[in-house]
Length: 83
Image (tube, rainbow, N blue to C red; front, side, top):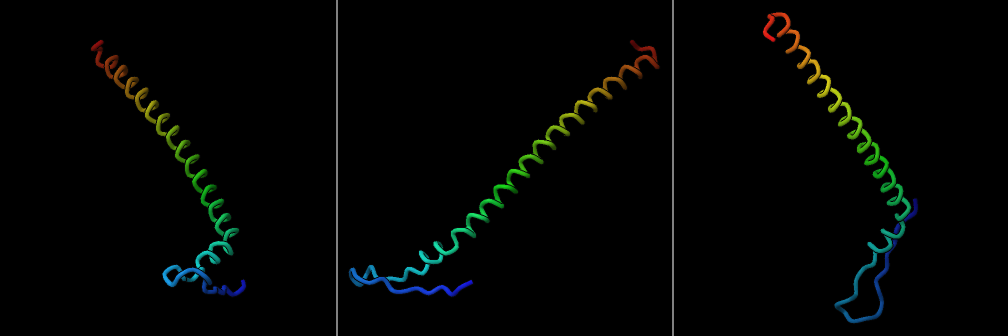
């Protein structure tokens, strides 16, 4: 990793003079920034996929619980000969 140097902007009036350190800093770390964005996108994709799988499992388990509840009501009715 190299050193980051900055220089004062030349020209213009006294009010617009300033340091362009941040411009250089952003340009030098462009590849690192892109790699970070790529990693974050992969994490987001993995989390979205996990959420979809979890939603499917929850829906399946709710369906199984409803079915078992219905079967239980029928068995209780048959056991006590209510129906």
